[in-house]
Image (cartoon, rainbow, N blue to C red):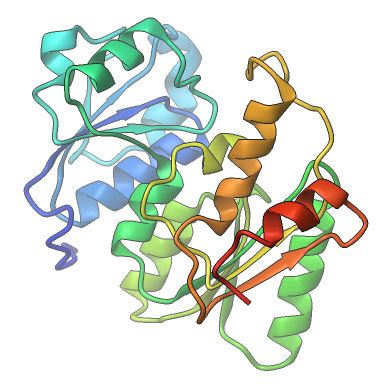
Length: 242
């Protein structure tokens, strides 16, 4: 079934990384009418389970794409596990390629709103607890994101079911660093302590990625911040949200 989504219909999209989020992003984009290619630098033998999950609408081209190939696509969609600070990705972005993350692409076509939760510790527990409370209150929800089901998978499911749920979404720094227009109607940051410094050059870069959960919020939106963290409270003073 093809979904009517002009944001992706007819677009040429390269999904980079064939883990759970990458395969979900490829399937969502293909269902929305995009011309989708997936790539991964790992050998095909290590990707058999992921490749089996792909529909016949998705083209597979393994290996690192050239700069010329990257520029042929309307969007390069990075899975959370793919480091954006790779030479070929940075060169493609500098040359004009539009590089985004999986949750950004999912948000382009979703119908519903996002309650986003991030933090160094406790975000999975908080996401599951929040989802259980809201579901018990009779609210149509999808618990999704880093908690186990890719946002793209949840968005595709809800579109096919013609629902507009509240996506209770656990968001890692890896997912948030690929956001541009992504917006949470409600966003919570539980805490932020040094972590993933093998991926980030310093703690500030990691913390800045976490704070992107408040990106694009306005006075209609809500930010929930740990009052015990002086830095987060200081940053909260810069926000437009309530």
